[in-house]
Length: 400
Ligand code: BGC
Ligand code: CA
View 1 (tube, helix red, strand yellow):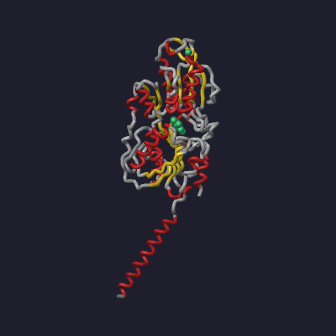
View 2 (cartoon, protein in one colour):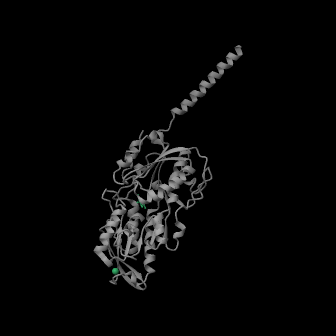
View 3 (spheres, rainbow, N blue to C red):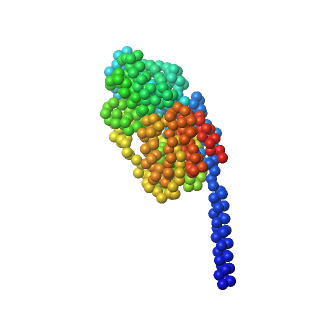
């Protein structure tokens, strides 16, 4: 009997100790300030100078950016356009004045991706004058069929909606209508820094039929429009690699990886679940950023970019499910809503990520911030800001 009482006592003691151990573990709960934080698509940066906001990027050791090579993409877009033009005959100069006139849909003058595309197109066309300001440009030149033409940017516009939202497709429809009336057959080419605005231009009832038009993003409707001969080209910024990349970095951080493992596992080597993103994604230490690469898409290769081509390198894992809150600056943005979000929703469950998505209105940061709530109940945060210089508004909410 004594023995039994003794062993019961020992058992109680051991159980008590184990319990204390357990609750001690609970006490070391990860604070929000130490949780993984990944910015994506809008790189924390100064809207005027484009300088990266490294204070935000160094918020904690688990802060990263995932985007794509914006400068490289601008160059791809520029080359796509000049390759098209140089393969044309003299009829490309619609009014025969020896000038290739074009109009430009800029998007968001304070967004690094927008700036890089303006720069890429202007450099290729020779109209780059060292500034992404819509009004600062110079005359370029291009040789088509042995004849040298001047290249003139007739007008460029940011495309801000009546509600203040940027990259606005309706604003592009309206601007295109105005340009078609104002410039008539002086317009030989339309350049748009994203597909949403390009598709918007094509909606203008007086769009000059047959005038080549280029977008960016390779959204499903744009790819279809290339197939239908309405859009001349677009650039794939590899949305699958970006969406999967955003989630992979978070997964790695939540699995406790540190150092180079964070941006190599699942990228250059398989992760512990055997997953690896197929396309190349480059890491730039000075920006704490991972960048997908771009590819030009036109009538020769559009069939390889049709909807539903997901990365076979990412398969179902048995990773412990973690909760992540993710913001999207504008629920009406064609790229983010019709390309990025479906990709996120496809890859997240495979990687054991339970996503809560909150979307803003594209104009006020509060439209996202007001829904960036219950932060203690999430294991990590993924942020697409309304303005590129708003990172502190989010990190301030995570500072404890
Ligand atoms: C996309 C645009 C999009 C913008 C939003 C860019 O990377 O190419 O289509 O509107 O991001 O931030
Ligand atoms: Ca002309």
